[in-house]
View 1 (cartoon, helix red, strand yellow):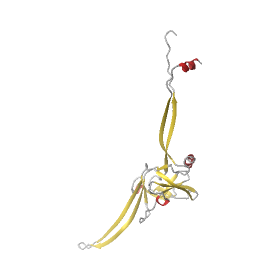
View 2 (tube, rainbow, N blue to C red):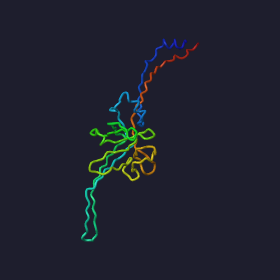
View 3 (spheres, rainbow, N blue to C red):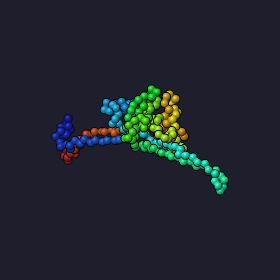
View 4 (cartoon, rainbow, N blue to C red):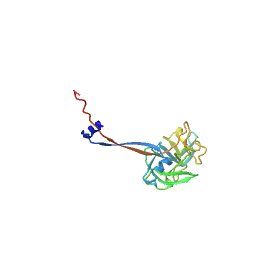
Length: 211
């Protein structure tokens, strides 16, 4: 066709290849793990993130004292304790150090600290019936009691407990908030979608007078 002949002889601008990268986050699922299996079968390069910040609180008693006030004759009770708050923020990258199964479901053991390379100091995320990996275990701390877990901030309304409220078919209890809307701590990855577009600009000469 004549128009294509003109374009072939016209001076076209150089083809421009543009690379656009859009970073988003999505939940870790079996499909996601399968898709990266060929390039990272042991998940050593993969970095995962909690979908929401959470805090583990460790407490222990240092001592109690009871005395009788000499002036008022009242009993005075004293208590000493220590509390450690470990916050895992939503932007904090974690590494998968081990994969295993629990009650027939896959578990990802995740460390958010380079010094931690063992399961004992890592966080456990188990796959629930909807295919998402949810927090079911936080590490223990020597000398402290069972940790309390809070979603976003330390507040009675943000308390989380291990429960099977999400689905009765889930064999392993996972952490859910206990007040208001039941919410858990899920596991996400960052994903970059690269789009390579070749743009060719074809100039038009317009129609000269007299034609």
